[in-house]
Amino acid sequence: MGTHLLLTATLLLLRPPAAAALMEPELCYVLDAILFLYGLVLTILYCRLRFLVHRKSQQSAGKETEEAIYAGLSGESQEMYETLQHQQS
Image 1: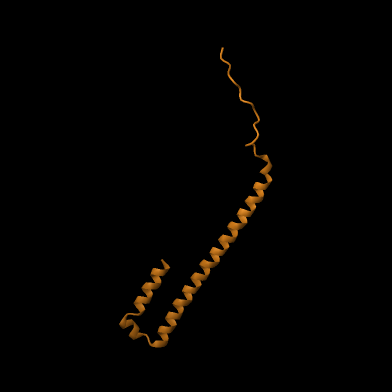
Image 2 (image 1 turned 90 degrees about the vertical axis):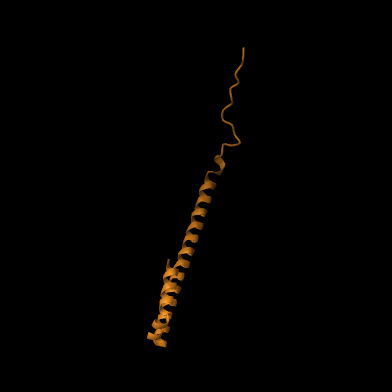
């Protein structure tokens, strides 16, 4: 959504009447503001991604230690009860 807004704003500013209305320094200021906002959005998204990856790695590390506590309690190889065989008479 932000990319569409940025593209629309750029196209509106670069129309011949709008570009003629803005002198060259003002056009540079507008483009600098757009680039600044774009860089700010990318930085926020990058930090958010790094934070989510860090939090996910911490959760998986906590899960591994939790699984290590119960590692000796698996009953897959041990059979607690013998199966009863029906005798037919």
